[in-house]
Amino acid sequence: MDNNSLLTTIQSKLMSQFGNDFLSAELVADYPTFIIKKDRIADVIRFLYDDTELAFQYLTTLATIHYPDNQGQEFAVMYQLHNLPKNYRIRLKIFFSVNDLTVPSITSVFSAANWMERQEYDFFGIQFKDHPNLKRILNMDDMDYHPMRKEYALEDATREDKDDKMFGR
Amino acid sequence: MSIAKNTSTDIIEKEYTTLNLGPTHPATHGIFQNVLKMDGEVIMEAESTVGYIHRAFEKLAERRPFYQITPITDRLNYCSSPINNMGWHMTVEKLIGVEIPKRVQYMRVIIMELARIADHVICNSVIGVDTGAMTGFLYIFQMRERIYEIYEELCGARLTTNIGRIGGLERDFSPKAWDLLDKFLKDFPPALKEFENLLMRNRIFMDRTIGCGPISAERALNYSFSGPNLRAAGVDYDVRVMNPYSSYEEFDFIIPLGTNGDTYDRFMVREQEMWESVSIIKQAIEKIKKEPKGVFHADVPEFYLPPKEEVYNNMEALIYHFKIVMGETEIPKGEVYHAVEGGNGELGYYLISDGGRTPYRLHFRRPCFIYYQAFTEMVKGAMLSDAILTMSSMNVIAGELDA
Image 1 (tube, rainbow over the protein chains, first blue to last red):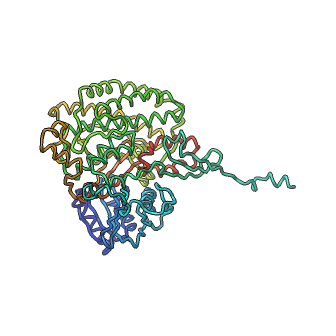
Image 2 (cartoon, rainbow over the protein chains, first blue to last red):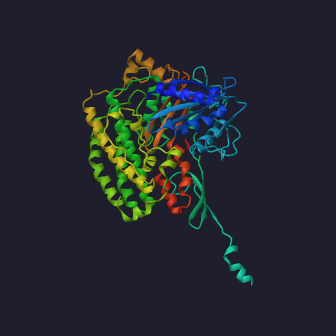
């Protein structure tokens, strides 16, 4: 199955199974990418894991992206799944508001998601619901902010000798 | 009466010892801590703490032009930095859509396979050290030194190499580099053979490592293992074969597999992979002979720095030099994921570019970080000394673990 037919197959399966909770599908570079409603992500991943034809039983990685200017959808979490025997790779995405950072945890499907989700909690403050041990992992425990968010600029904001117009963001 | 009561078995309270292994302990080969709950010498529970050398690479990358991110990737798995460098170059090349000449791809394959050998040499010889066999380590480490000499000739650095550039390599292999490579290929197989003679069928080593820290294929997949650790459990997943990059599809090599996923299998898988790497390097050298000489980068003046003598004498070259160094070249918007087979597994770069001079978001899929979480499960019920062996045979590199 090439990427295009994989895209349409999964699209029709997700559409019939999840109806309106499945939002859109498109091919980004060489990756079929699907956008799902946030609250159903764990169900979708469980469904793709159990499906005999698709069988996405390997979690490649997951990452959060912060879009501070995207009103109402400030955060996105992307999950990359892999079907090893058939070598299908797909990407799932959820978008949600900064006011509601609760995301269903997928640790019940993939043990590997445990530390990956802790990392996203640590750096972005995403609250993974039903995570067995949601605490900071790379930063120290008493840190009181989530450093990967875009509002924390790397450069000291009080410095005047560096002009961002000339030297990038 | 009271004496009898005290000696009866049902009231003796069982006591566990809490043992703090690390953060700095000679046997952990890096800065990470494990708090172990011990029943005598048996581990009942383990809790890992990581992050002691966290350097916020993903955050740093958001303020650096693309070419300045390469030195960051050096410091992920510092035992095989060239693979990380190449992975990053290939990610950016995928984003900007550069076709790399075949000769450069083969040269990259040589560099990456040398790095794989260096990585496996470290890991396997340290397994030997942790079982008490110092000799193999001392002998084979000379070969790592020889690899580092080749790196030095190719890029000037040894450990954190920053090797290659976006669009190719910064310089052609010098005659001295070819010479060193030939000598290495001549001397390495006997040295590896000698190392294998010391350990591979050594009764003490086998008794010590077989059945130590095993993991089933099913659990390994659920924990998203990759690289030699997954293959030791019997799953033939190798990025070089599954999603070939840098012309790996043209090479003839096998994926060594284990069955039990224990320390001995991990050791053996790495051992066989080194032989395969030697064969891949030899094939690459043969392939390079058929390619036009002197090509060492793609023709992408917008991304590849012009030679220094031209910068001072040629207007265009000066403009391009300035544009590249200041990060003013146009980068397309896009979202790419590129994975390479690193020393210890699938090393992936997830890159989002919004067209600015730096990535909007860069996420590293670090194999160590993902599989190290299985450590607590793998050592449950094992002896303390087995935990040490399990850790070293998993090839946990602190730099990659903490990013």
